Amino acid sequence: MNDIKFEVMKKISDVSFRCRDIGNHLNSNSPPSVFVGSGLKYPLVNVGILSPLEKDENVWIYDNERYWAQNNFEILDILDLRNSLLNSRFQSKVSDARLNKKFVDIAKEIAIASNPVDIEIELKSKLMMGREKDKVITGIGMRAPLKTARITSNIKVDQKVDKVINDEIKASDGIEYLYKNNFSEYTLSKILSIGVLGLKKSKKFVPTRWSITATDDTIGKSLLNNIRDFKWIEDDELFFGEFLGNQYLIMLFPGVWSFELFELYLPYSSWNQSNKIKASTDYEGYHERKEYAFNTAGGYYATRLPILEYLNKIKRQASVVVIRLETRSYWAALGVWVVRESVRKALANQRMKFDSKEEILEGASKIGKIKFSFECSEILRKSRVLNEIKTQKNLKEWF
Image (tube, rainbow, N blue to C red; front, top):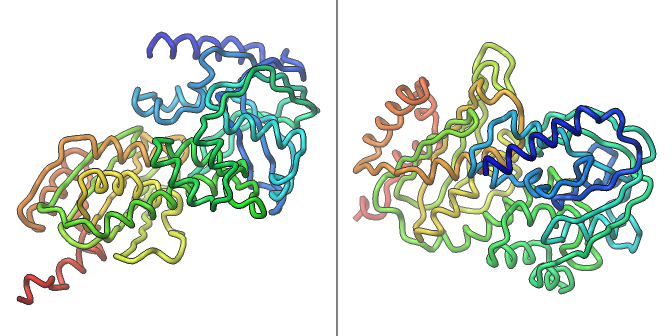
C-alpha cells in the first residue's frame, strides 16, 4: 500500500506543478467515476466524468473510500487525491438519461464499468479550480466544460449489473439485488446517480449527493425488514472508536428496533468554526421513518447502515443510541463516507458487554471522559430511546 500511495502522490505532485501548462486536450483514465451535480435549477444537472489530468495506472485509488479507510489515509492524502481530479462536465436534463446522446452514453458506460476506463477529452475552456465544501459528497478540485470525449479502452460490465440495467424492475429492487450480490454502497450510489436503474419510463439522473443518501436508506430499509423479526440482543453492548477526528460511542440495548443519533460539532471542527459546541439529533422508532432526517441529514443514514449490517450479521435486533463527536482534528469536510467508515471501525473494535442499562451508561460516560475528554451524561439524559427504555414496561415486567 505504501509503495502505491507514494507513487500516486509523487505523480500528483509532478502533474500539479505543470498544471498551468496542460492544454485543453487530455489523454487520461477514469477510476471509473462520474459526478452528477445539483447546483443548477432542477431538473437541470451537470453530469461529469472524473479523471486525473494524466493517465495513471493506479487511478482506482482516486475514488476508493473503503480503501482509504482500511489503510488509514490521512486528511491531506485524501485532499491531494480529490483535488487532482478533473470533473469534465456537460449540462443535461435529468430525463436525458433515457435518451441516446453521445455524452450521456459515455458517462453511463464509465459509471457501470468494473475497471478503470481510458478516455480522451477535449475541454471547451481552461480549468476552474476550487473545491466546494459539503457534508455528503467528497469534493473535487477541478472542473471544466466538456467539448468532446472518447472512450479508448474496452468496457467491462459485470453480468449482474447488466441484468439489473436491462430488466424492467424498480431502482430500489435493483439496489437490493446488487447489494445482496456483494456490490458496495459506493458502487450502487454511482450507478443510481447516472440513471441506469429503475423502470425504463422513469429512469433519470440523480444528483450524486442525493444518490448517496438514497442508497444508504434503501439498503437500510431492506435490512430492517429482516432485523425486526430477530430476537433481541441479550446484553447491553458498547462500542467506541475514532477515525479522522470523528469519535463514536455506540450503545445497543435489548429491545425492539429504535435508533437515535446525536452529532456534536466541537469548536473549530470542520462544520463549526465558533468557540461553542453545536449539536443536532434525529430519531426513529420501530416503524419506518416517514420524513427525511433534516437535522443530521446524510450522516443519519450513513451511521445507521453499518449498525444495521452488524445486527443483520448477528441476527439480532436492538435499541440503539449513537453519539458522534466531530473534533477539531476533522478540519476539512471529506463527505459522508467518513461517517460510514468511522462507524464500521468502531464496530470492528472489541465490544463491551454490560448486565444493566445503568452499567453501560456509566461505562459510556467514563469512556467519553477518558478517551474523548467529553462528558456525555447530559446528552444521555436527553435521549428519547433511553427514556422509552426507562419508562415503558416490556411484557416480561407485566407478567
